[in-house]
Length: 530
Image: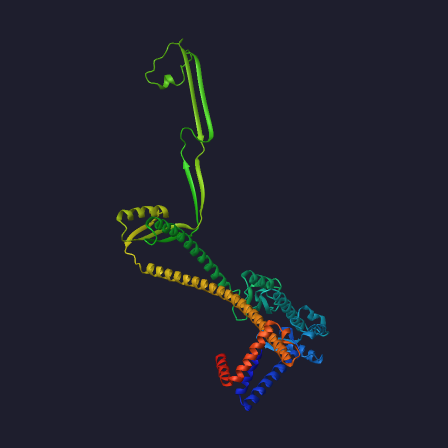
């Protein structure tokens, strides 16, 4: 503490009187400024928002009521509306007082008819009804989380005697969304349906929703384009996934076979996204009486007896040329069987729906290093064709071409990898060095602390020893003086005291005998001490 005080005094003495006054005045002014700002900020009340994003008319009415209530307030104008700030201690009281007076009014709903007066015309009632309808829709739409403020404009058609001359109702809705928010398609559709079902004769096609930047949110053309674009993106994603899957399989096969970096494969896939419906009807013939019998007719005739029957057997004598008539008494037998079968027509019906996404055409290109032999190229072509599932009848093709590969990229990647490894090693060594340095500082601090304590202890012991020697010397001197004065006999002194007295007497005698030499010796001692 004393050392610092001496340093400060030394620095202070370097400045002249004028500089000292300037420094004192600056310090005093700075203190006054700090205390003044602290007092000003401490006495200023904390202002909090009373109402935010109000219309200008509502903000003026609220300000007038606060002024009459003698409540201090601040007005902030933003692009979203007017915000009024009041002290924290008055915010709840001000809100209750303003609520009893119906402020801020905001969007009026059907409560507009609560103050209906006599003599109101039909036109005024129609206007009030339109305002109430717009206010109710505005309130409802503002309940959506992403909507900060809404404005609704409705146009109701005039009644007409002729149906053809009637015009449909229309509506326009402007929305101001909260920061970093966006309405989804479902939310936009919900707002459209809400307005359409709230106004008689209003259809979703006659509703327009825009944001505060003028962008139409429910543009049907844009929605159709988005749907088409989404469908196209889905097809592209599917094509890319199929292509990447086949290419990955081929590249893995090549890397495991030839080694990494000695062959590269690229795949081009053309998918068929057309929906197909196929009806097939196949008829099969009946083989070996296999089939379902639809109808069957069996005829059986038989006859057993002699030939005396006039005319003989029916149909034989008259129809067979060269027929020899048998004897009348000969025995005869006759049997006839007929069978007619009608089978159901064998048919097979198939109703096939081909799902989109099948491969229409597949093309594979493989580049190998020029050191790959021709037999290896042929083997690669066969293996890759099997792995990729190439179908020549479908028009699939494959090509394997040998080319000398450039090692520039590989060398550059190797150099970058080595540089990164060296950088990581340097960081690791620096961390180890910092850790060792920290440990060394800790150990050094501990050793310095212990050395300081040891030196302090030794200094205390040395001071104690010197103090004891000083006291012993003083005591011996007092005893010697007492002996010289005759107060104490020399025999009563201890041997040490006697020896000290003899040394003192001898020294005094030397000083008396040789004062110049003693003075020179003392000067030499003082020079050595300095």
